[in-house]
Image 1 (tube, rainbow, N blue to C red):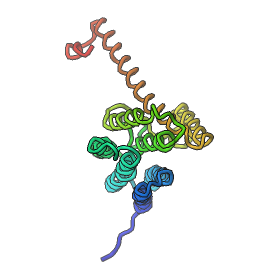
Image 2 (image 1 turned 135 degrees about the vertical axis):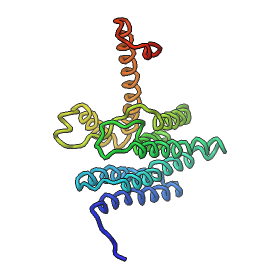
Image 3 (image 1 turned 30 degrees about the horizontal axis):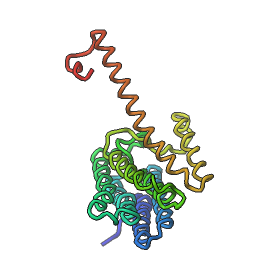
Image 4 (image 1 turned 45 degrees about the horizontal axis):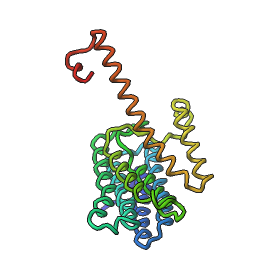
Length: 257
């Protein structure tokens, strides 16, 4: 038997590194080492970005790579954050806590399954539903920098945790458009300058605040996506109404308008 080595081995190894770091994060969470686990999951996210970039650079994107990436993401950004949620709080409220903890994994896997069924090898600017790695950043940044911070208001810790968990789950299985991470090439920057500028501001803010700004930046990312969806829906409805008023809308569209 001869082992066949192809160009896809490089991005696939990066994906496996993401998977290994996801497992490592779970191991640290089981030992209540949440800050180390969060750092490990951050590196898992970096490898997740790198495998896609490398796959496009060496022209080795494949169906196997897509499936492998989803399996890795389900562990690193689904199971690991769910376990962290359970460990830091939800273990204390029984079966309800199990359900809330599992929500991230369940909706994340549904999101990945939908993505795989519609996947292309194009470098998209938007995703339908919140990407699973972004959901992990949103959850983990709140847990590490606010929920576990003894100086953060006890009055808001638990209610806000529920809000973040529910918003994350709904966002992943929604059909709302969420921005992809801007690629650092000149053509992409010229085409979408504001996306690049906002991401750069967020990156600098996270460094300056030693991570605390990350939750605010992710909150802006989530809420901003919803606001854009509402504005686009209102504009579309107004256009339908205008067409109806001008007598140019079909009978099929009248109920919508």
